Image (cartoon, rainbow, N blue to C red; front, side):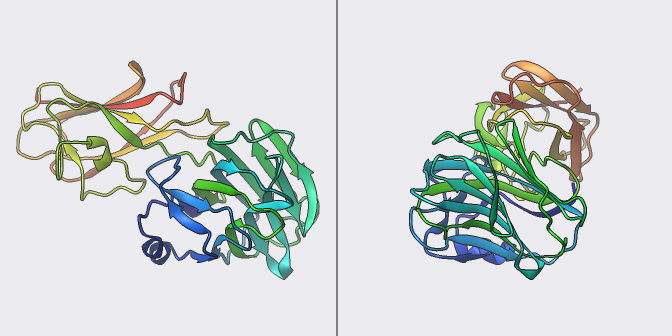
Length: 324
């Protein structure tokens, strides 16, 4: 996936997050918040207040097509008008907009004109995934949104693929409301971009496993979206099929695309250590991989999931270390 932007808003400090990502904010009603989150422990909150409440980034790029997606959690629907949840500015002031109206339906705008309204209603207090597509071509422009199994498509011309600004959470068209955005992604390679990232959220079994900095909440040592070797979990020095099992975040069944499990691993000492990493639905194995005689140097582990997953809301990871 050729990512243009992606973020899960995992910063405890708003200023630090903006500095790290290059995104800027407008309005006091937009915050990084821990009240609700889809993955990790934070999301972007657009508060119940008037005026523009946005995150925006300069996004000068030229693409034939761009694809995006995000999770949305609504606590208060717009009181009137519509709220611009996502906006992509193009050259000459053209805009592609995914908006939210008082009936909790999504609207699709291009060039300041309402083109489509979904029949699907987004439930309150529930994380719902939204994806979108913009194809720039004089004779075959496509502007599209997908939500809850429904697709709405418009072919009104957007004349260029050159873009200027990407915005999340613009409130400036009438009534107020409150919603959260998480796991936002924008790319030019895969449609629809499921944009789903599963994270460990709790320990299930951790006998004989430990964590850097402490032995409680081992899941929190391996829950980052970008790999970091500064915190980790580890087995006994000479493990005997020692297992650690962690619960993952709840996901939705993807429409399409590759499903990949990624992890980092190494050993200490000179003994041969084998590591087995498995993906489970509760206690039922979906797929696993065994790495024999692993190295003392950090390495990337990847497992492409080819077996079927019966329940994306009950995923677990199992790590088993063994000295043969």
